[in-house]
Image (cartoon, rainbow, N blue to C red; front, side, top):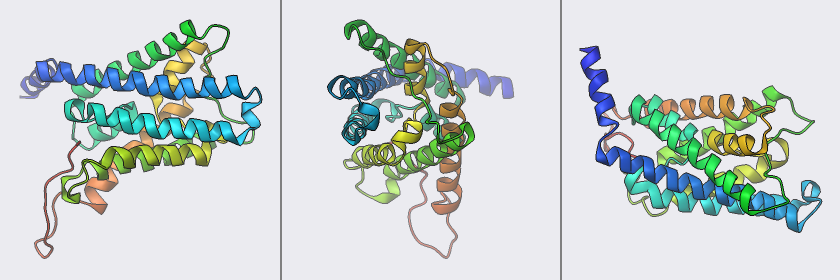
Length: 255
């Protein structure tokens, strides 16, 4: 039975609808990474001392908020608008997406990120693609904790924004997700970069040729995403409620 179930899951991962969802993830992740990494490069171009200029932080935070909200919106109906391996991992842990589908989502997101950063490197001659890095004032463990907390907040917002029990949140859901991402960048950008997205960190690292502290942008976000999904589904808003309570009992949806 296990073999049959596994075979069925893999077959479901290559259906036309599944392939369309992978393409949607590729497109949305590509433009998200392009906008975020591009904003980092633009701020460095306009402000040579961008590292100590608060305006550069605001620029990157706004780019994160706008780009993520738009990316989630354009992919929502096709793939759920994950745009982030951590979000996909959190959904897989919560049982909202199968493991084979999640792996294909990851591949689409990672390839899209590398392609976006590569395009920036090829077209913007004379400027390096920046890789995410942690500041000297914080340790690798501390940066992982920060990224985990940030991603927890992001994925928790994704769960809430896609929960049909919240009523008419479909239109404002992507905006809420983008605003959470922008706020997180403002809070921790100078310390860990406020990535919250392993694909974005991976793509910029590949093109920049610097993998220093890359584990920070994987371990923290994946753990934070998993905790957010499990907490939302099983503790705060469980799909099954006691008979003494009234309300809708459907599971969380992804837009």
